[in-house]
Amino acid sequence: MGILPINQERQKLILIMSLGYILPVLLLYLKIIPFSWRFYLLILTAIATLAITRLYNFSPVELGLTRQRLGISFKVIALPTLAFVLLMLINYMMQRPRIDNSTYQLPFYLFFVGVSSPVQEFLYRGFLFAVFSRAKLAPWLMILLSSLLYSFVHLIYQDVPTLLFTFIIGVLWGIHYVSFRNLYSIILSHSVLGVVAILVGQV
Image (tube, rainbow, N blue to C red):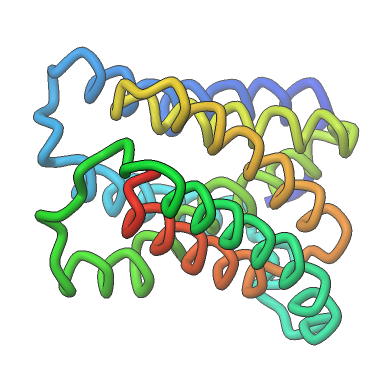
């Protein structure tokens, strides 16, 4: 499949965002699809997205699945990741958890680290930025749109602080991804921050 004119690529981008990133969230938020099915919907979306990557003929490098600059990207993301962890721990020690996540057991955390975090990063950074690049969007717009969509998916939890936190961290990960185009370092950061945030009841 050859590269389409920019206007056609942007039309396809709008269709992908509408059907793949906005509609599923609205279906969950409006309870048309049960909240308990959210992870099944995430997996189905990932499978559909993988099919689209074949249609686009994206290379692993375009999707951020590369070892290029891997070491430096890990080093750069480590400091802000640890800073956020420290802030969450300090907040946890100063006040009670906002959300009771005590029902989550080890299988949930294993699923989060092994499946959910990698899939989310593939969807909201790797794949999205590859489509953005084909549509010739400016880097700042890529970061803004990906962060808004990443925050929007958390609308299903109906919690404003979670929306704000995910937008801020989405901007951080977006800037990092634009700089290094390496998905592995962000997957690690996402896994660490997500596990800590859930454990201390922040999200």
